[in-house]
Length: 59
Image (cartoon, rainbow, N blue to C red; front, side, top):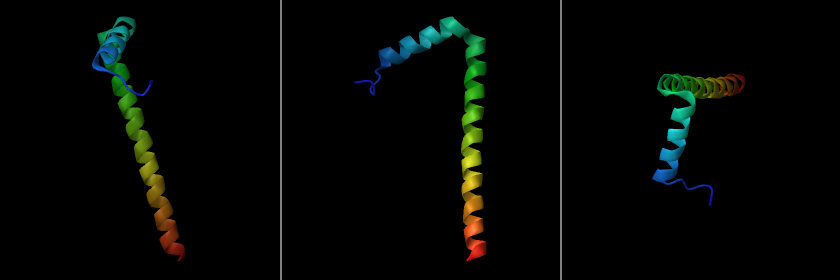
């Protein structure tokens, strides 16, 4: 029930966000969110590669 969003729901959410934050603030918010997700993924990848290197060197 809550897992499926149609196009009209997404348009409504975007319109509400646009009214609340404004176009320039919304762009900054999206950019910051993208950088945060990118940094999180990079740290997970780095941590994963560090664990693999430790496993190989101790064997």
